[in-house]
Image (cartoon, rainbow, N blue to C red; front, top):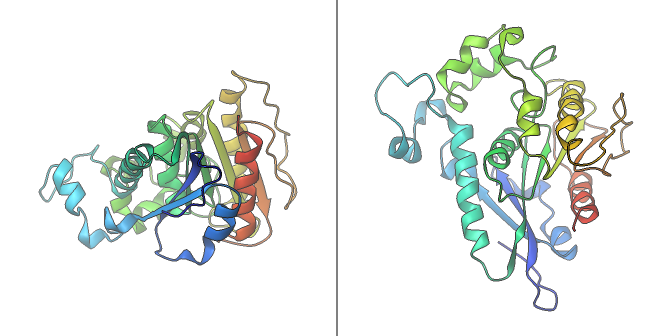
Length: 268
């Protein structure tokens, strides 16, 4: 964790769920210069992102062991979200951290885990997710690019085994991803998309935000436009926000600066 404290006041903090152990997209100095503390943990230290190494130590500690996993057994995404909450435990105990302003951020699979963490842990003030796609912010019904069949075939260790039963059967799902976003209301949620990230499907991510905004509307007027904003034009006036930027599946410095703008706008 790194921070620059001003006048001794506790600092708000951004906690990054790092799934690639690559800090190039994490502009620590920019975050600190804006008055935030920067914290991160490497998700694979909690559970390796490798189906051949599943379950790891955390899974063996809290799950049944054996060749056949229970149908509702948690997967790596749940374990990473659990680890993020344990990081929240640590941050809340730090005298220089503002315990009421802890935000969790993630890119791609890290974004999926960040959403699951924030949905379950009400101590998280805000969640900031980039290109989270399938099983993240993107609705599953009608989604293009990656779908439930693809994601369960490639990453079966991310989910409970029963999830695979809905491969090619998205219309039979008893819920959809906008309900996951809605679990964060009335706290802060900011979703971002890349215009060329067809696998994540920016239109499906926008549909998730638009549908979930009804939950925020219960607390304050939240009238998002019917169509997604143009690239480079963030929607940040409400508790749930969104932007698109030109480019593909990446988390850029520009995305991070918009994350900070969003949190600043809703600091009180």
